[in-house]
Each structure stands twice: as C-alpha cells, then as structure tokens.
Image (cartoon, rainbow, N blue to C red; front, side, top):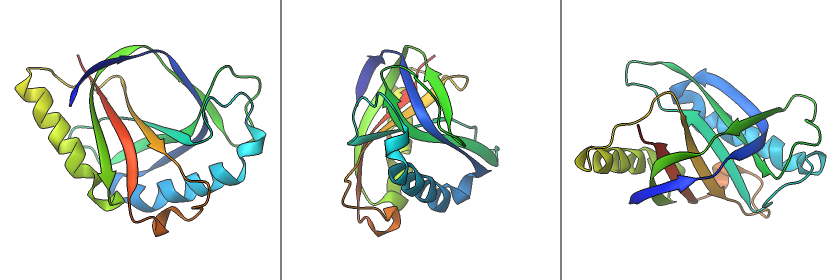
Length: 156
C-alpha cells in the first residue's frame, strides 16, 4: 500500500445503479455486455483492462452507482446506452488485490485502515478507481475464481 497520483482518465462504458449489496451480481452483467460490445468503443487504451469507478459511501448509505468501462485516449463517440465519464487527476491510496471477487471488501478495509494510520482521510467527493485485469477468454465473470485489480481510494 502506498500513495500514488493518477493522471486524468476518461472511460466509456456502463452505469450501474442499485443497492450496494447487488453490485456482486450487477457488475458482472455489465462487464459481459461491455466485452460483447467492445468493437463499438473507439480509441481504447488497453483492451486487457477494465476501469471501474465509484464514490466511496459512508456505511449508512444504501444505494450507490458504479461505472465500468474501457479507458479511452479520446472520446470519438459514445455508443448507444453507454456513457463517457472523466476522472480528473488525484492523489490516492493504492492496494493490489488478487483473490475471490466476493472477498474484495477486505482489501478496501485494509487500504482504508492503512490510510487512517497514515493520517489520510478519504475524499468522498472524488472517484474511487479500480483498474481490473481482464481475460478475454473468460466471458462469465461469475465463473472466475479470482480477480486481479488495483484499487485507488482518493485522499483528501
């Protein structure tokens, strides 16, 4: 775990809005659709990596939004039913997580704890970023035994 700065990131993909507990099933559905429609997105930076973004929510929040897409160099056009969103430069606490999808919250807890120890506060108004390694041979996200991603939580 350490501090990093990320440059501006623009993604094109899908917005998912649901109760927080449903992300485990809704994100895989959006990911499958994203893979199926990859040919519709121009200027993809890396086809082997998805980018997920969301705002950290205090524990009393129930509903949240999550965006999953591909990072693009520039927006030429936005396919039907997709969105384009830009995350501006920010300093983050970073951790790499490799493991079962359903246990990802432990990595978030570990990074949040480290940030508190380092006297860094979460910036709830900025985007948390997940850079997710993909494998084009795996289309059904729920069948993946593990996931490999870098988690970036924004620092105030």
